[in-house]
Image 1 (tube, chains in turn green, purple):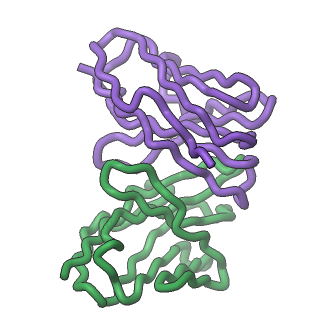
Image 2: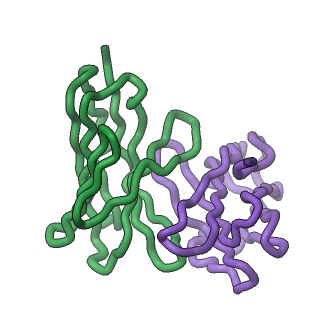
Length: 109
Length: 115
């Protein structure tokens, strides 16, 4: 089983709609999680950190459920520019990052 | 300020040749990471450097892969006797320290194609 697993999608989302997807992880000792965004043929960029209490950044909400070992990302009022691959990431000791395979989101007019 | 830079942006080589990839981290960042991303797959950790400590090489796939870093500046990733399965985008990232509270900033990557 991979350490970090994601539904590859694509999630086809009408512009203005809400989309949510999860990521599961297998290492119960994992401490820190992040969502990165990667555009086609570009480098990943940090979208947001994920806290147990849940955190929100504008239209984006991330949540960590340690009991069930999953992380979620919700995007409200989707924009065309939100089309990208969203990478679920776990940080291990030394801040070595383990990436999921990514969830592709396509926002359509 | 300047971000992480990598060179070359693209490299095409023949099977069996050696290649050297370069990464210039953000100035002042003590931690530097190398990752590999094969087509359609997630990033895989290869190696990381933190200050003057011994590098963590736990992600290197074989002894054909090696990396060096000069102090807290430039790093080079060397792949000897390249194989077709080495074809991937090699991404470098740097962060202020190697703490999970420090964001890693990625370079644009080097796209390696082994024929």
